[in-house]
Image (tube, rainbow, N blue to C red; front, side, top):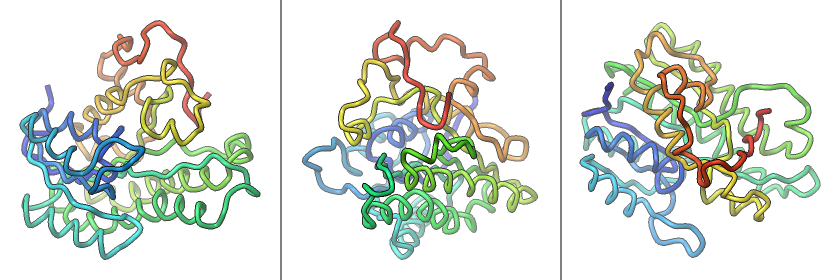
Length: 273
């Protein structure tokens, strides 16, 4: 099995959900994890903080650094990166996972919500990549992974929720550009997106329209991310990958264990189908 032992991963939004699942998967290998997220104190509606995630990482044998950071603030990003490098000696992998969601039409999207999605999803991804790149270029097998969808120009993905779609496809455009810009330096830049809806706290933001029993657990995305991040960075870059496809490439075909309720039909995630 390929391993992330000794690698340092800077993961945004790692206090819960998919980000934490990726962190725990790497921690089981003995990786160093920078838990870069906003939630330092318990949230009334959302489970998990940077400190509880760090404790879970340590329990699995990983090393954790919990850093409270708002990725809309370049100074906070820079400070978090400096702390990571001081603690672990460098950064091998950046996972741009943090994301804000609001599936509203144009007239129902206030400027504050628009700015949040653009600031976290697109701008935050760009700024975190920018801050980590000087350290990634020194790493032995450097990777940047965005949790963003395959690029598309289909109107059906823009009409219902234009602002959110622009912000997520903005992350994917970062994949396209950074992969080409840093190809010769050997820094892999890829996107990963779930084929089916994942049961995370983000579902609550959708007003209950998506039932968890028709979803998969975050572990499927974490397992796919692990397979990507342990590949040779010079031979796997600029790709828009789906979790099912990554696992199939690795010979994993039995996906029942990832279902919240095995046997139930699964809902396709946004931007797919």
